[in-house]
Length: 151
Image (spheres, rainbow, N blue to C red):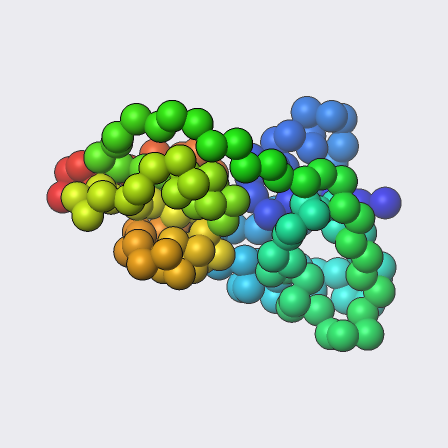
């Protein structure tokens, strides 16, 4: 059995559990990461632990008859909370977008930053323009936020 990760943060979590990671995606484009992963995997079977409402971006890169399996291991629950105003809001998933907007109306003077294209698309569907980080890591998000404030 081999392990793969969408990002360095996920790879670190896997390694912290004592496992070696054979593939680590890079960048913020899950479609491109999926294509890289398909090339690496070849015709081997792949198990994807996923959320109940997962977008399945990486899986879409595989051919229809590929031996891939989804295993739902968690679901996301939106819990509206009193949310303070922030000049910059960082979104790490489409469910973050749903949760935030269920608790607070978006203000025109706010800036949105998304961790990937799927999250950016969820914001676009809500009429919110968002910058996208260059990768799926805390470093990429922090760099994108700092660049916003420096420009």
